[in-house]
Amino acid sequence: MGLVFLFVGKTKEGFIKEGIGKYLDLLRKNKIEVEVRELKGSAGTSPQKAVEDEGEAILERVLPSDFLVALDERGMLAGSVELAGQLGALFDSGRRVIFAVGGPFGLAEKVKARSGLLLSLSRLTFTHEMARLILLEQVYRSITITRGRTYHY
Image (cartoon, rainbow, N blue to C red; front, side, top):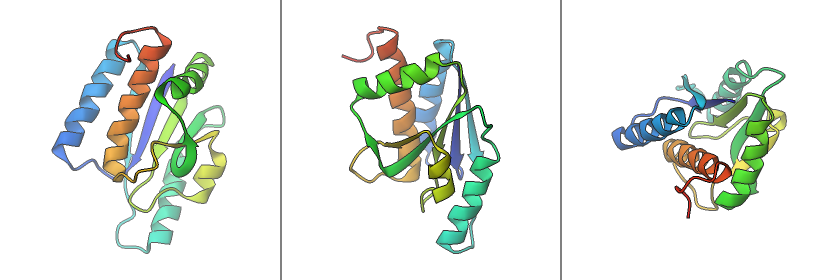
């Protein structure tokens, strides 16, 4: 199973970088191939143009055989066990799973249209950097749930 996380923009907050590193290490210790790619954000343009340019950068990295999970506030809301069931089936499919987290203005409609799953982390609003950390923790939690590990109680 291969997991790719596409994040628009650099992670600037030190505590978030540390948390992301922690969950990447935990995933790798569990024999999960995982990669994080921070894509250049489109600074200095209108929000609409930035989202479109960032969407192109995301879609350039998605192969036809990949399963794309796009984070969106209007996406599926799920508890951790339900999410683990959804992701577990994807992980078992042998397809590369790509998670896309947009920048401050969100994701382009064409990215959402290409995705096989629109996922919302909460009804609450998080910064795009916090969403990265929460997503990684939930993916790690999903792995532990599907493997019967004791991380999730």
